[in-house]
Image (cartoon, rainbow, N blue to C red; front, top):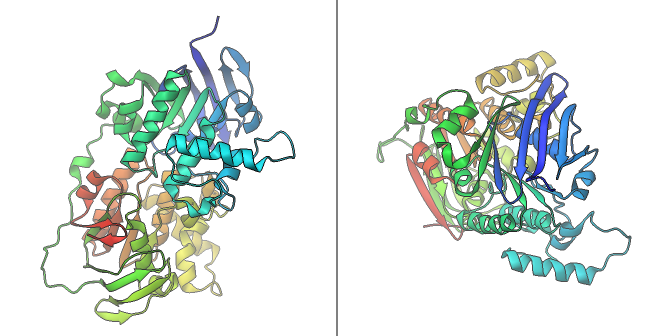
Length: 478
């Protein structure tokens, strides 16, 4: 007789040097259900998923799949048992084609049937409505399309357990609904789905059950239909959530007579951004909004010269300046937190300390390195100020949760004492508590006179933080 649970994890423990990541954690997954795994950043969600998928070996506990006790020693072991995974950070190969990414590591023989691979990829992409070609290089696809390709790869492996770690973080609303349609279809086929997200509305729209972790421990398992949203947040944080109601925008009158801190006229870039005008004043928080692909990120990348600027004039505090590359922007007091945290933000193999001091060291020059004592002092200050959860300043940043990595990048720029800070999706993939912390930090910076440009896919967040919003469509300001 088959058990109803396709996956059971009991008493799972996992530790790393100086960190107890999981302690006596349990999790069950039924056939044909979506089970949300919830918790703040650092709660242990990613670690539990990596134990589920053979990336990490558990220190203690028991795992069974369809009633059979198993012990994964590698991701291949997990795949052999029908476990498919899409991680929070895209783990495909950007220098390969879409078709090659779809089938890499899945062939049993040295021979590759390229024609069959392309044909199968075409059918899969068409069936899922993914706007990509089999021969297209993955790096030429947007983050949203890359995420959907990763999901398609997992779905195509005939898995009975599908783990989706923040799959919607790069998707717009239409793409989210398309993914949810796929998830419902998979449910009807008996596939069990583990769903990790920080979008609470999505949890309640698609999930049947919810398991909450906090500080590496199991808090409880609940039916989604009987757990109110505010109660879920309280269980995740270990306290009542009343901080959102305390957030108050730093309003600046539309015509206060002050000179703009930053002003651009006819700014355009090689990324296809059409000429636009833009100003921001001291202590103002403004936002770029629009659908995915509207040009939000490309516009702020033009401001920072992360993409080649092809036209326009720029003034800083009323003085005409040239910003042809990021170092010019940095020297003018402009900081930029990029949308792609993994690809453009963190230096994965460096420590938390070295990631925090990086921008300041660039400004000082690498011929004048900071002493170890200075670097430690800088890092300690922002670890405490931003409540970064790390075992030490020497911990590799890649071992931190996504939210704590984001705080490190914020600390990097705050250390330079910027006059103008650009934040592109600073709360994407971040838990509710950390999201509120970042929103309050942004408004505190504005009160202190820092100008902030804020981009978010969540309109409610924009309305809470921004005093002015700029709407984008087709890479132009509407």
